[in-house]
Image (tube, rainbow, N blue to C red; front, top):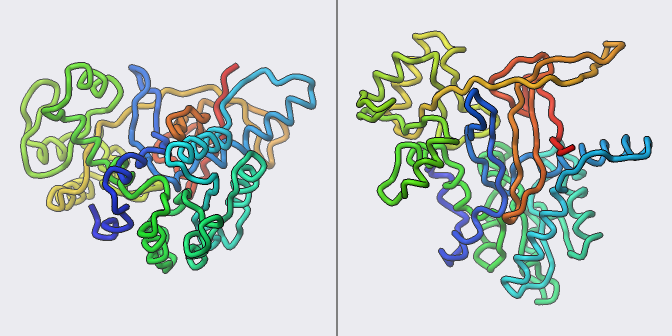
Length: 356
């Protein structure tokens, strides 16, 4: 793991590991043989919960005005509220929740956090948004005013880029404030974890191996070594170089597609250079490229008078909050192209997925 991630751990390793997976959202595409999980986002800062809640609110209001709502979907805010209620009951803690983030990570606005705290406060929890400089107020106060639980709505790389100090977070964690997901969530979301599972571990049962083989694309931790592909032994670096068009190169820790190289969209010389550097570092994976199936979607756009239809290749993000399904986030390009879909660039669109 990067040195920057070697911090913010709870003193009790059981608590640290027990609550690492409270907030998760894998990235899934429907390939030729069904759903394939491209990566696992496990973090209190992942996109999707606020977005799905807001998109659902729009759709409910539109259909309600017509007199009927013909679809269903779990509400991520409701699922997250239940998650914190369960955590409070399990830990014997007061239902007080700190939402930790920074408006500096949201263009200077607090609306993203206010939406969440307002919902919590209207549904039985006492919630407050904290900037890192104010976080000491969550624990350095009379016992009845403390916030024993919280949502860690930030990433270390984001705060490093903004020049924000994580020392207040470490102080809160050391004081016993449980911020989910805990630092171990970064290990769960690491692409290296997917590579290890795809290759197989000695402790895995036959059923677990079959599960992985069915839903994970072929993924390997890239280094100068041998491995197996389609039942035969191959030199991993040589194989990666020779099969550029069928592979994707991903750094172990990254987000927003910034550390991803798609082979078929890269010149051979650049690909070979990237593979060689990644193999030497040993902190990246190569993964089989999954050709996404498309979905016919009605669209409307600025400057276009009438709705139109286009075949989009959505990346689906099923939310799992405290073990409960919490809606499905969908990102796609409105022009029907596929590839890296990020909310931070490329003019991608997003919406929620519902059951009719």
